[in-house]
Image (cartoon, rainbow, N blue to C red; front, side, top):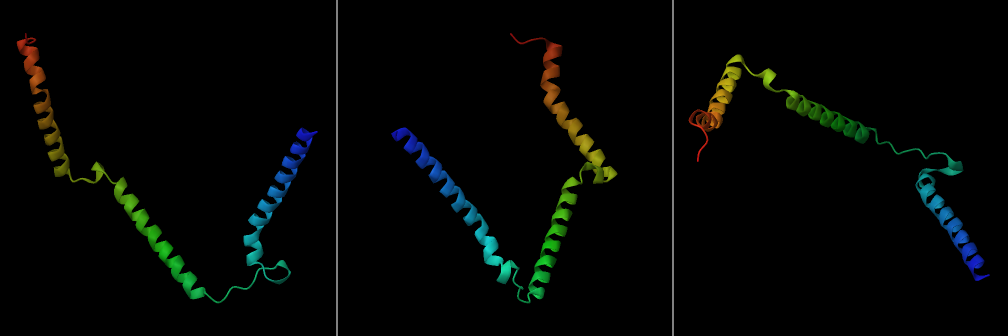
Length: 110
């Protein structure tokens, strides 16, 4: 018998907890509702909302500009910049592989 009472108590507790959660989730909606469940008229805040929207738009524009700048890469380089980049890569490649080529010509060290 005690096991069944324990099971019943758990079920009852879970039902009550579920109802409390539902009420808690609905509370914000009730707080916004006016008489007869209709939304209350908001005070005249048009100027504030317009300013906030404009600020959000400006932030979005700035983010889009930053993304566009990040997307730009070597294809936006001038021809002279590209030539210099190729020279630098070639020169550094020679420095890196110079020791390797010398070992091949002279044979392995002993």
